[in-house]
Image (cartoon, rainbow, N blue to C red; front, side, top):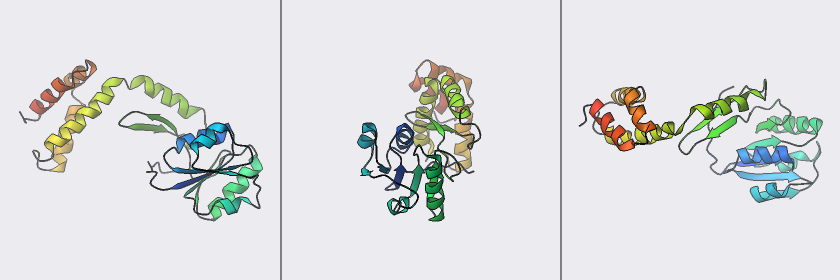
Length: 205
């Protein structure tokens, strides 16, 4: 499978199911337009969804709620129903995630920071594995990584017109990422000194 990061835009995600699994799925798609279809729906889901359809669904009626959807999520508590929703959605050419597997969209475990996102997926093999990896990554990525991203953004603005070619700019930023002294300054929360040192390293001061 190919990992991607998808902008919500005006895309519609239709989620079948109104329980905790559906809530977890909806939280992942926060920012998208979300339609929830179920006969019993948690209050938190109602608050999160843009549209709520209070209706029981079976294999013969699910299709009428899929029109206009960019992604369909089958998140009911009924394995067989999820399979039917998944198969129907995919037959319509809609990207599909199913709580019981088999769809063409997988929802990874995600670590969100202010400026970047890390995702991990076992591609459905062992669902317990990605959250564990995310936990370990979270322990590794101390605040200096956030500061490094801030520093690189500052440097990119400076070098856009001062370093002539993209390969040279990429090499400069790669060198900064590998510079232990720059990292030491960032761990001390001294971004300005890290910026000054980086500019010196590139011969820009």
